[in-house]
Image 1: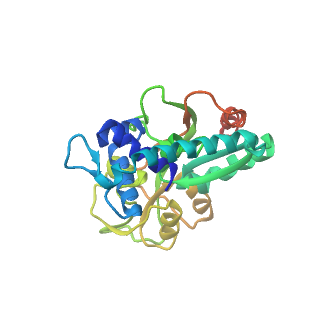
Image 2: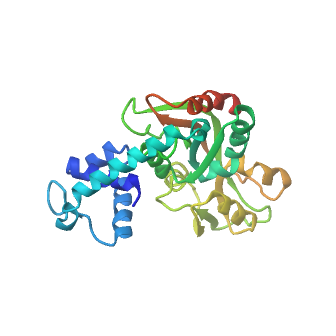
Image 3: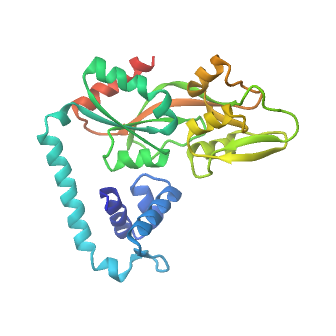
Length: 285
């Protein structure tokens, strides 16, 4: 059982509402509901009686509430103690980033932080909701993510600090020999992935199209596009090498402008985190 799961359970108990618990955990209600279902699937039993208002623990889970609170407190204490006593931790930083960034921009960032600042970096790759979840549960010091002008800033005002690192674009790519007449074959992202939500919301194809494949990984979209399966949308930074080599072309279809941002919790920060935060604009500049 993970610490963040224990905190999710306690947030529902304390607020009596899945929506208020999601706000406390600084996640969207849909993302929080998915995580609660994942916890219940992992445990193998329902944890909450959703038929009652306010939402309550099932009797079996309620009998363990004190144990859950004690376990969460003990785990927090253990993490803090380990961090404070380990010399390596004083020079260590954990960065969570979206899968697309992990394979395109992150290597340059990590290389610089390790070589220039002498930091030890742990890179974690996940979908956007999970990246913010790692920030909230302090499993990560900062996250690097994509954002568009239409995206709402996560969390309550003042909960996160945000740093603008530059721009990118989500562009269509395909194999040079892909037939472009008739029904357009498309490589799609799942609806519950950030890029899936983004493409559904911001890209309008004024022509017939058919989803030929679906994957949450931008690297897979890229390789499927190279293989001639269809047109896929990937960040330009990821597609640049393939476009230059001629393995990919960019058809005349809509694209989306992206901002690249670094995000961390507001408040006091460790010295290593502040060093990385100050260095990021120079790396991306």
